[in-house]
Length: 393
Ligand SMILES: Cc1ncc(COP(=O)(O)O)c(C=O)c1O
Image 1 (cartoon, rainbow, N blue to C red):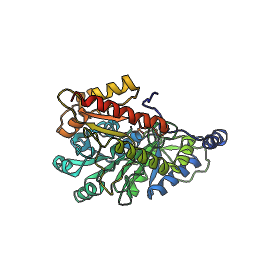
Image 2 (cartoon, rainbow, N blue to C red; image 1 turned 60 degrees about the vertical axis):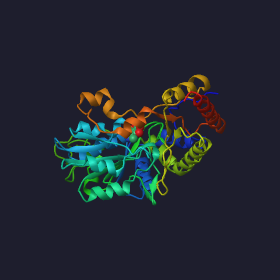
Image 3 (cartoon, protein in one colour; image 1 turned 180 degrees about the horizontal axis):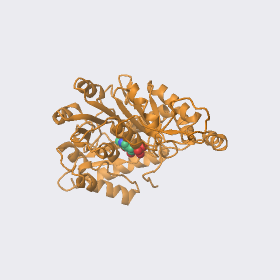
Image 4 (cartoon, rainbow, N blue to C red; image 1 turned 90 degrees about the horizontal axis):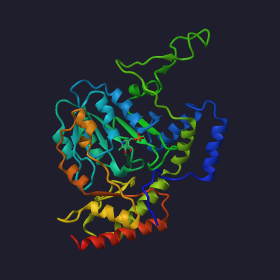
């Protein structure tokens, strides 16, 4: 048996494919029509928010957020170093100085304690990331920052559906983004995202920012074709718009997948719990401590493998791959270590937990189309390798 690291999170049913084929055959327009509107409506209802905008990716949504923040030179933005690079690039592009936040070693997500240490008078915004699908303590962090007029961005690329006390991730901050990329808990045919903007006034700028500044002519026109089909304008100083739209077919997929998100998440949670329980006697493998009332939608299934003098997680990953064909991964390389961030002078850091976790973490394949048989095989393979490695610890 082989357990690969999959590039797709889930499959589509025959009925869903037929629905999408019908959009291909009949939709006019094929972009920015009724399916876009419906997808945004359905998503807005799910998170119980207005001002949600379908965007071509979470990275694109973050680009729009970073434009709306109107960052100035020397403004500081605090971002966890333990995340995917897209959480930081849009803010760096605007010229902000990125201050790297550390994770809490037990939860593997940012917490208020480290954020407090990194806030200065120049802090303009903070990006909090619900990494792995685990809700960081956003209520506490946002409560603290609100009083200080610091803008908060929730990166929910991995956490659609996770919540704390009935409040879904992404619904308390000034801005938030979600991802429907190929491997996420739901995908809109490989790429896609959603943006939430709390401020109604700023939300009005999103359609233009999303679509090359397309806008209505302000005065009533005598002839619809003059002076041109659409106006191009943007009511934001010194900002250029982007082209970050989703097609009607992708929006159609989004409408369908929103019906399934809770079911998919439940399946992930059930499997993750089984995995953790089956390996509970191996104290060297430490899963994140999920606190009650903070939910985890297990976008990924990761653990910390306590190293000994002779053995570390590379032995675990290597043996699982070579002898059992189970392909695990390491996530996430601390952003300040990447050449790009170093070249851009963003290599300074104070993140001991990020370092410690990165050095010995392991991420197990966790796509939900994995069969139960494959999943059980993965559990038994991990057990066998852990037992084997215990002899050398
Ligand atoms: C934490 C995080 N933020 C942002 C993104 C960017 O998402 P997208 O691929 O939709 O641009 C990802 C994607 O992997 C992510 O994991």
